[in-house]
Length: 112
Image (cartoon, rainbow, N blue to C red; front, side, top):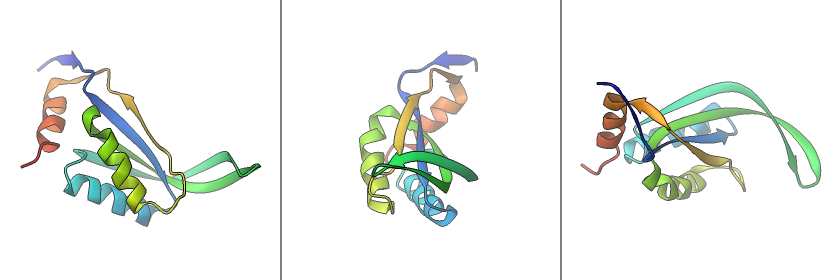
């Protein structure tokens, strides 16, 4: 199949305190069919303002592919599982993607 433009799919970006936390979040989101796939990438360094000071922390990134309609449910679930008071949970649209891959995301994020 050819690529197609899609406004209904997003990549969700989440940072976590460590790999164990990211693994729990990723596995839960996939098991609950909120996302089709989650990638966990260890070894990032984040710099940010928190409570008036610049902070630097080692973190883990989780990238998840899903339908934009599920973002609110994903945000709620991540907040339940996350150790941070204010976790990074953002999404950006998948503007163009393989039709086969987007169809797979659609199928995997539908209740079975």
